[in-house]
Length: 463
Image (tube, rainbow, N blue to C red; front, side, top):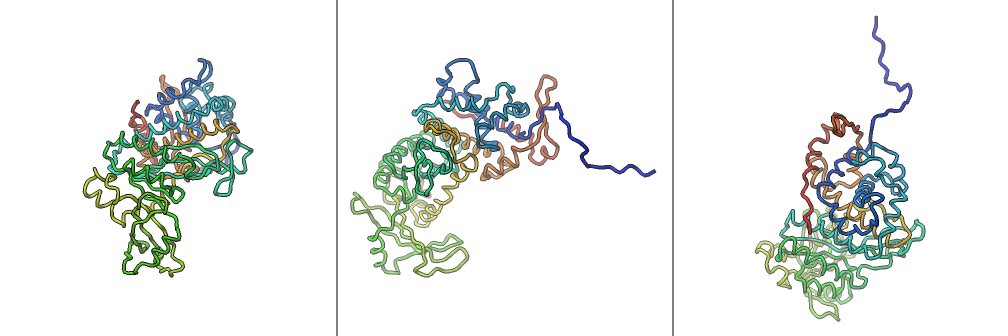
């Protein structure tokens, strides 16, 4: 007799008493957070917020918030109410369901932060920066300072939401970026322009000593700025701190007049293998400045596709730097490093990396969200700071745990789809909790190796 034909058609649906989760990869991040010793830093900075032993521990709020941001399923705090009913999610976070925070508890948590809490968040973010510097000890630290617009144009009225240069209403924090990570930030209203007040100079005086504390007093520090930071006070601060800078200048008429009067034979060529530029080197300063700086005037002569540009269509740039004219910046560098960083080709190439410097802004917005959830400025500042810390930790998580299965340049959406959003079953047996994944996940992601790596990451040094 012929065998009955096997059918794969679903006949009905039913429930199961098994503890299942669709975010099995979060278990890796949860274990990573616990092993890097982040909780003591947060307890030291914000332990005073917990007025009694009732309610959830402080670390539990931060851990759940960081996982909520990495999960990325929702940008609304009310999603915490949905998560609270999911025992599989609680098991993934190594918690009992009763330990999960509701949306109301999370809102009360953020309302407890005062205006001065921003300083505590900055210290934690700075300590994470020092942690990574000490692990890598680069001979040259290249960083950039820039602003980022958080578009809150469609959100209800929030304190500090103001018109920005991008013609939307929102916030405009000032941020320092290093190696794809945001390592310092000041949360500000939208109308604060790049160089508002003394914020940039104060950030320099705050961060440069930290860099030298982590990598030694003679480490070379080079900062890149766009034209919004073209200000003598910033350049003088870099000189005083013995920090190199590469800043985009402004196209003043005096520069155009000087350049147009120069002999064409004085121009040199720079080719990066894809595009060609002409450049002219000279010394220049604004009329009110106290000193001249090394200046490179560049203009593209060929597009990446090989098409040569006519004179009227060439995009021009002015680059100012103190490298090569302020000896203290490279005084303790090796001869090869001094030679490299005083070459015009190196300065132009570094200036061209300004575009890549801003990629962490895109990465942060992909990881978190722009519309902040509260009306009060301190609560939004605290939420933004938590988002920065979580983003920093997600980047180090990729470096320390996921480097062999994903490029470390992957955006959060890729990490979520490949690593976080995996089905898993949580089993209690033999007085142990076991997270079970499918054979395909175990093989494709080498999940057992990822689990071993997140057990022993480099811990954050205590202060």
